[in-house]
Image 1 (tube, rainbow, N blue to C red):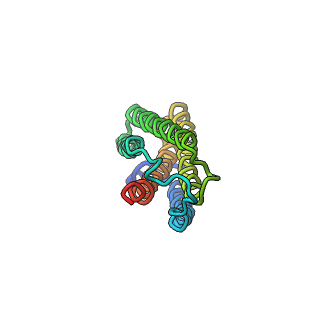
Image 2 (cartoon, rainbow, N blue to C red):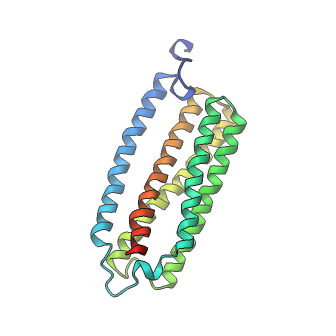
Image 3 (tube, helix red, strand yellow):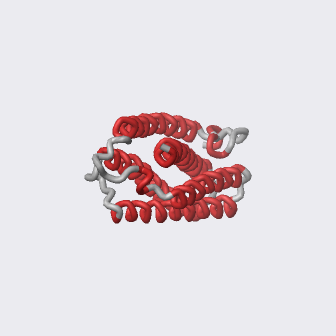
Length: 201
């Protein structure tokens, strides 16, 4: 078994199985890019069809959007710190930064859910207009991915506590970090092309 471990590589890349799994996850992220690109394209086509309903300027709240952006960007940074600690074989530091990342992710979801509740109270629902339908589908899909990422990361934290830092748990941690950074990149596009464009326009 030890003969198949290349200790000259970072912990998450030391076994062939880990390298294949990471490659497979990159391919999966390619499919996710196609999914979100499709949702952005739909929003691009329908984003100005208000059907006499609320427009982005009517409902978007800059304060909430900035809080969400700050929380998610910070969580991406702390996720990077977790991987940094992992590569230095510091389990405690890894767990600490992973938990901080999760708390920031939960904070993001909390603000986003309250944002959606605000929209509904303003009469902005999926049935109101094509703009709102495409908006809720795009942001709801991203939010669902964040929720899944939080649950996934909790399961990895449990494995790290039970099994310690091994090539297998390191690989799983690295993969969830790739997923989390991907969600952060998607949010930057949402912030730019949905919120910023909507409020400026």
